[in-house]
Length: 95
Image (tube, rainbow, N blue to C red; front, side):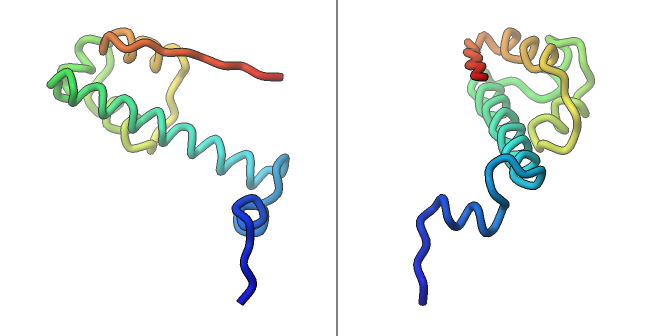
C-alpha cells in the first residue's frame, strides 16, 4: 500500500492548486467554515435563527441557508451578521 503526503492526496482527490475543481472545493470549504462560525456565535449569544434574522434584516431561511452552506450570500450580509452577533471579523487579502 502506497502512502501519500496530505498535499499529494489533495492533488489526486480534489485537483491541483489553480484548477477549477480545486478552486471550487476551497471556495465551498470557506463558505462552510463561515456558516459554522455564524452558527456557533449565534448559539453562544442564545439567539434563534429567526431572532438573528430580525437583527440583521433578513429572513430566518437566509440564516439557515448560510449556516448550512446551501445558498449564496453576499459579503455585506456576512458582515452585518457578525456585527449583529458582536463578533470581530478580520479579513486577510493576499494577491
